[in-house]
Length: 301
Image (cartoon, rainbow, N blue to C red; front, side, top):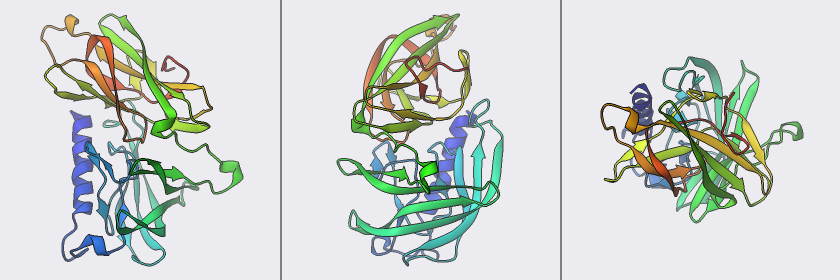
């Protein structure tokens, strides 16, 4: 429930930033420089997760569940070659889960740049977050993914910080490992095999279970589960290598009531909007998804 409330709050806050009042952003967004402020999503997003262009957003989602955001943005400039703001970074340590984890807050500088034409609008296509207190920063720019989808790709500030670009949807083959069971707990590894050159994965896949009646069960994100503990890390992949994430659930046959359960799953790799559908032999309920790790079994520590 707490995870659901976290997502609803994040969506509500983003909606407030996306649909500004006439006094703050004015009408006719299409005629102004805009920014796609759900930077964990693709641009312009998918039917399941739209990414709407904004003017002077007050909130930026670094993760789509709201576990990491830049909030309370105050803009000192907008519309020129560079837009500047200050705000607060708020991030959960996701222990024991992202909804209940301890949040840390830092003051940050937020800068938009590299105006370009995209989907008939002038768009800020790069963003940079500077954490003066933490002596760290994030810098990403839009890159074409597939079809009409774009994705924010990290830009390295120096060769020492060079990181393989995020894996795109067409680079990955997604499959399911063998189902394992222990005292009513079930575990299923979701495998991401790189078939398109060097790239990296980081964070949580998005997983939705589909019931026989077509109902959708969203897997909650967590760093702890029955089968171990996890931490978020960047997993580099070369052609032919595999990363994986563990999907946990309960066996509905062990429960006195009959909760919603799923054998079919819609799976999206971290920060990719393109979904694939995969099916397993046995139903799972009360789904939990853990971060991507190296290897085939999705195992934690």
